[in-house]
Image 1 (spheres, rainbow, N blue to C red):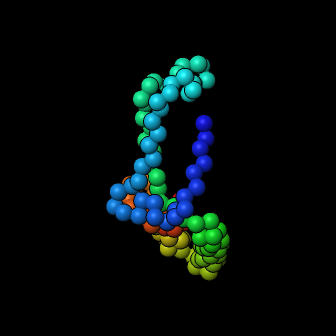
Image 2: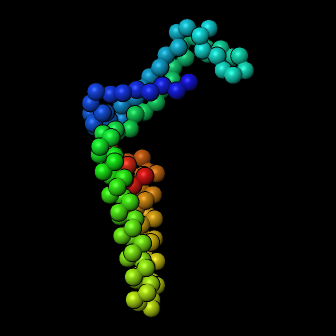
Image 3: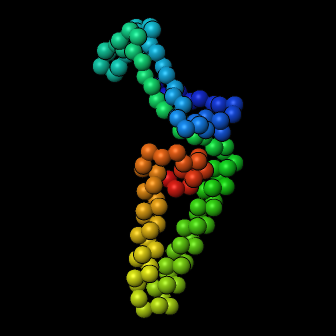
Length: 119
């Protein structure tokens, strides 16, 4: 089952230190079954943390900015390879980009726009 939820103020979700959670309780077991016919146990609870949300316009702006950033990175790498003989600076730059990109894998409180652009 897929559920789409629209929030009136998405920027207010998880804006504190702790994440907000969405909780679903099943009180009627005969309505929810798995593919093999097993029913959900009465009183089962599903919990899911909700990450920070950003508006669609902000997401579009971040995606376009990220695309421009990627092109700039490739241009810098190409110029570095063509204009200098040493590749140490290029590999150091690429390794630091990899480290920054993996920040989103840690459980940290990043703003929604930063987590979106790094992920």
